[in-house]
Length: 516
View 1 (spheres, rainbow, N blue to C red):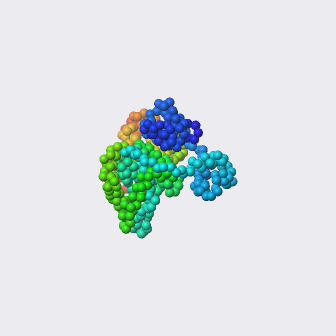
View 2 (cartoon, rainbow, N blue to C red):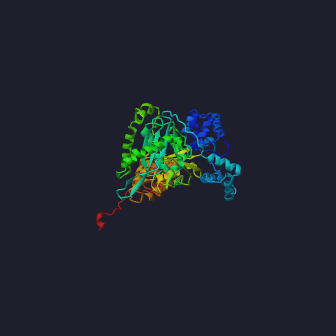
View 3 (cartoon, one colour):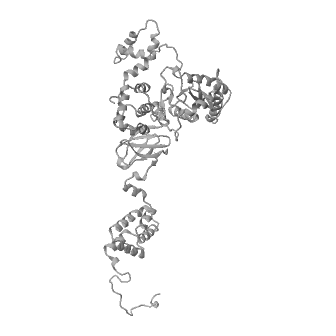
């Protein structure tokens, strides 16, 4: 596994294909990696006697810790530069007198650190479109789902502004039965693409063996630093539903000819029939699309004695893999350092989440969805939270705090009353009288802490007698109780005077007549 490490989503795809019985060479071709890389990862699995099913269920940070650490950092800039200009080179080759050497000389003049002539020609030949006879593809029921976006849009009117909102139309079909699904989404962004695909799988009521999308970058409208790459997002969805992703080759529309044909049919059987209707919401538009697509699936096919829906229900639906119990939620990945207050901040929402205090200062990997936030440290999950969207808010778990912070946070009159009640009745009454004084509660917390310390360091009977004396004299202070204990006043009889002797009888008593 030397060289540039692979993403964990791609490694899960490798394991998924191996589990399905695919050969190493075929896995390498599907995933676009070398056969030696496939062998090295599978060899690591066999050497450590790891269970493939359990590995696939692991979250990416945990799986990464089992194989290798770190993230890929090497990037071939020469190839990126060449690929960005390959369409220009192919077009220029069609012009009279233009040769590969001439193009290479111009290429080197503008990019001196580029490929040599041999490498340039090799990569150019790899990109050339060769004319080949088309083949008849034999499809297996429940095997693949072809995915694409229609080139033309539909729209609805925002009733509050009167604005015409254009929508992209997601189209998918099962090649065996040619059963079609279509729905409108607001854009071709990653989130909308994944949402539409999830709706499609639940509409079908099952999961095919493989998903065959168009060039995945076509689903990205604009870059967003908080969204993962499309490959990661789609692979995560495939891992959740127990399927694999086999993208169609670039500029090879015949690889998914059936979904291309479905787009044309959607134009005539959905777009055309809705052209004179106006819709006031995306939901209303999708309801109309669903009705027209249903009619399309129930229309008899040419030279067939059945419709697409009959073929799907009879021969294909029962062969689809069952849906998981939970609906997929798109995952996002970030890394943060655990702050001294044992929280990390998810900057997308400006919301804070607690981590066990023993991990303060460590680097944490965060995997979050629309509803959950999972935090990993050293390949182990250390915290799980429901996602909060309140800016500047804190989501904390009490067990993540150290004992000092727990005590400080939990302080309240009720907390101290419960604490005193568990120790003695005299102390409870003393605390009750203390809080009835009407002072601000936080002014009294230190008094309570001091009395609790005296309780821990004194004999139980002696301390309870001191509390009783304080109650009789209505003195609810730490100093008063402390002086009683230090002066051993609890040893004196309550009926005795401070000297311990009763006063003698005498007649020196003034009557009421002396008081005016």
